[in-house]
Length: 490
Image (tube, rainbow, N blue to C red; front, side):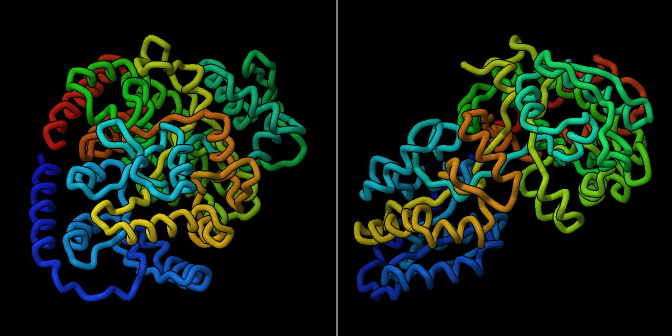
């Protein structure tokens, strides 16, 4: 309903601009780029100067932070000096497309840019009602289970991490649990416990490097931050039922009922994971300290991991810079593993997806897209297309994306090497096709923090006892009911 109202207001504004357009003054730029990522604003200005130096075309840039961009975007799109390239995330795109502002792949005139659109995998396409292809991704982000590869090698006495990564990728949830138990025994001074990954034998016997000597637990968990588990971990049960954000927005309310078992099992998995949590000074048990921001806040969790006091942290490629501030050695040796999931094939209703594929994949997503303004003149659109193509394919543009914006290029290939090893991991997963979408992005407002994450923090993380299945089912049902009621806002 809110989107429909915004579209009507935007359409009315467009008519006004059309009537007032006579006598418009000549613009002193060729491309007007509306950007909503404030962290790259300064670099964008420099990029515009480089583009003019190389092509003779002038680019006007205008930046508004993501949380404030929608209203400003409406105003700018209604103005005489409208942006010819603008940014949008996948959820907000419905408004811009409904108002007629987005050029789809079929309307792209530049054949090289059109080819870029057509190369996008389905999981990261900007679509409308689950169809079409309307934007070029800013970058790729993703998350999973992060570790210092040297730590894994030390605990398991390995000389090579690649074999472990390959076996881990094919391992099931029960093997993952046994690995965690063996690592926990090692941390508690009982080395040598064996386990298998993909049927191959391993032992948490310890090596000679001594990197593992300061471990306090297996996982560093930000128990005080609802979003870290409410958003990212909550995406896994959603992904078992919904293919992507378009599936979420286009489905009947009854489809949400299929999330019951995945939600219950995701909570059961968190019951397991939180038994092996590390803190700064020792293990952290569930209870009031587990949700105390001075103990398990986001920064504290990152520091615990970066100081070698935990084997794993569930996080994304964006964690690299924070880890590097604490330990450059750890940051340079980061690796990302898929989160193992406590699901059966019968819990997964997405066509073509099974638990083996989920267990070898990581969620990757696009936060923003470049969109060509369909209301621009033909020449303005041509100039806008040339700019977007140059930004994503030229040596100068690619250098800005990788080194100045610190982005993972959506079109990265096996030859792309970034300073951030986690970003290189994202590229590897993409090239192998081991990707999950991020349908959580289309969940009802605050579902992750005020339902799934809130229940975790306020009812479960403070409870040191076993979490009863009855309680978990009640929580899962509450999450589903909230989901259904929140669909009225779409």
